[in-house]
Every structure is written in C-alpha cells, then in structure tokens.
Length: 66
Image (tube, rainbow, N blue to C red; front, side, top):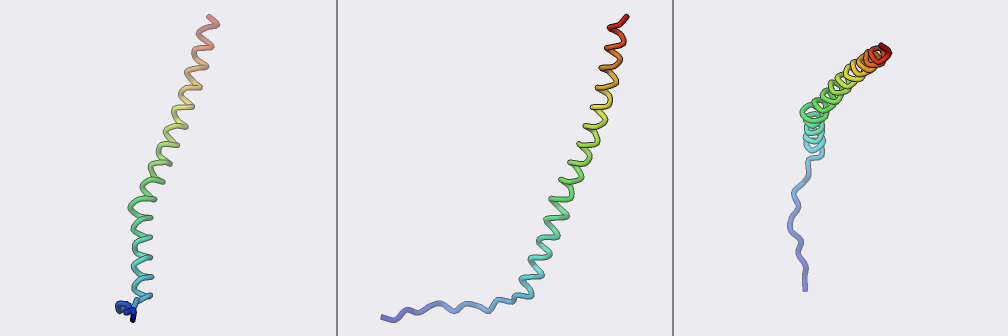
C-alpha cells in the first residue's frame, strides 16, 4: 500500500508577515484604540461625578447643622 500526500503550496512567509502586521494594525486601530478612548472618557466622567458627589455630601452636612 502506498500513501500519497497532496501537494502543499509554497508559503510566502514575507506576504504572510505583512498580512499579519496589517491585521494587527487594523485590530489596534479599529477595536483597541476606540475602547481605550472610551475607557478614558468614562474614567474622566467618573472622576467628575465623584467630585460632584463629595460637594453635595458636604452641602448636606452643612445643611444638617442648621
């Protein structure tokens, strides 16, 4: 019995490396960077809300004194 394997095409590693790099850049640009920007924006909003909450808590404490 003889086992014959199919021909495997030559792999162009240079093209594959370029494709992989472009794919990685696209993922970074289209997915990771927008998510990072959103996270930073939400973090800044959270900081502002915490500051407002602290101010309001101080106002309530002052009002309770009177």
